[in-house]
Image 1: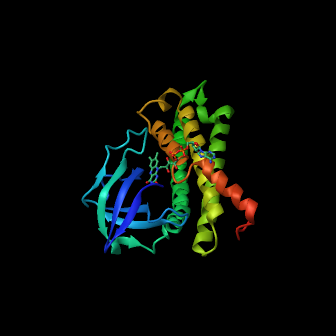
Image 2 (image 1 turned 90 degrees about the vertical axis):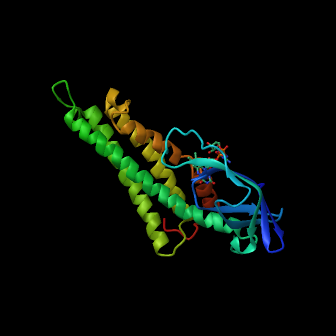
Image 3 (image 1 turned 60 degrees about the horizontal axis):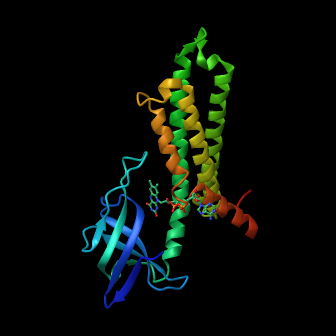
Length: 248
Ligand SMILES: Cc1cc2nc3c(=O)[nH]c(=O)nc-3n(C[C@H](O)[C@H](O)[C@H](O)COP(=O)(O)OP(=O)(O)OC[C@H]3O[C@@H](n4cnc5c(N)ncnc54)[C@H](O)[C@@H]3O)c2cc1C
């Protein structure tokens, strides 16, 4: 992290850039992590109002999906904010960021379950209606088994997501479970939405049906809030340490 926040009297002055800012250019406030010193614990957190002098957004990224939410690089060019806009103490930024990630991962897992369910619902509706070789395609075992695997993948993802959410509600450690839920639910959503396109055949590949969009939307969830490779790192590191206080 190279964006800096330099203390100057009753203010901080921020300089640098942040790529991939969700709602960049549209938000009213930005929660910004910046370096207040060079050491390992030198990251602090600030709340920067939109419209502050020196704060600007690049043009939004041209994405394959998630078009309802702009994503842009934010630039900080001598952005001066009052010191009371710092959230937490100096040096607590990383702790604040990591705490947000666990619940963020649960949120993504839940969204992935809903997306996959939407894809399955569309696929089942189509498979009941579309007939080939004299019967609805849902009655061809080869296709029916694809639908069965989709249902199993969704139920597994939902169960894992609810397990992690229950740990959170109970005030118990849930970092590892949030990573597992995020990884399983988004990998399953990618598979389920891709299979939904297959179930609809040629129409699945058109914009006349929603499943091609579901497939595009699923992809980003394997990438943001920590890629699924990073989730595997989190999970394997927690195994290397201890059982993280989790239920297994
Ligand atoms: C639509 C969208 C919205 C986003 N919104 C936000 C946001 O609001 N805030 C925010 O901070 N970020 C946001 N991001 C950024 C997102 O979190 C990153 O893109 C993501 O974490 C991956 O980082 P990267 O793009 O730098 O990929 P890289 O880190 O360059 O990774 C490239 C590939 O290498 C793999 N890789 C990297 N390191 C390792 C490793 N050590 N071991 C194994 N594999 C590895 C990755 O898994 C990936 O497959 C958003 C991204 C997108 C696409």
